[in-house]
Length: 318
Image (cartoon, rainbow, N blue to C red; front, side, top):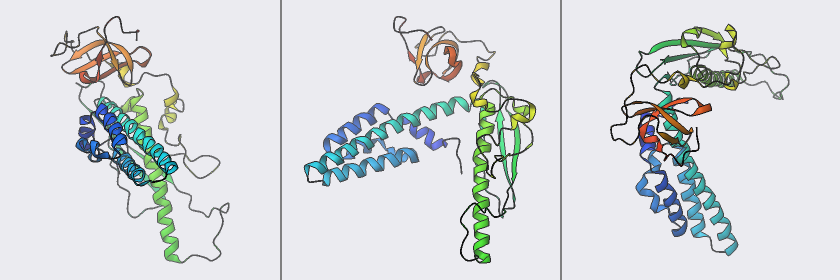
């Protein structure tokens, strides 16, 4: 039941995909009316999101190929073009997600494989294990926080009531389904809260061992702020809205920087461009890992292969 991270297989598969080849393959498929040009890329083996959009594109292409009337062919071609464009954008989005995950998990990792309890009780609990460190060279620190909520199982009279009282078995099934939904919602909020706190510069040692999730005061349900445990020690609600540069602001590490990468492509103070962070200046080099300062976006540590070197005259300033 992972949610935060791509699996190792997905990471490796997505990184191998050539986004330009996908774009050209989609164009060729639209010209030929067949997705055969995309098959050598093995997109169906990357991740669920890419496979979903690939299947949709193939289905829309097949519908277009079978259309006879001019109006129908125009309609189906427009639909195929749209699904092909969605496929291209999904591949780009997943490659960016993989890149961001690779950078994030050098400093923060949260175990998102959490199994539901059996049987459920009115008190639903989610235990989140996490680890963090200040630099990629430092020793990992580990911690655990248990989020809980006492679910109000009393009848909600604002909802339509059944004409007949349900059987005991049906009532028990409804109870289990309700508690599972509440547990799963708590799980998602808990994972997001721990990740948000650690990736926005929060000190992992300050995270409490337990925290009671707070339902909205006007109803029984949790909301996006229900697991903001940092409110308990005086930090304002909604860290996502704070003007912070996050964990990356702690970089670069204390180790001395190398003058250039092993292939000589990037050197200290070189101007670079990153797809997500924009233009920056290299401030630290350690093997294939580069720290660059992106101005308002802060310092980011990424693999050298993710950076494009800019000529001095092209760079517009970070």
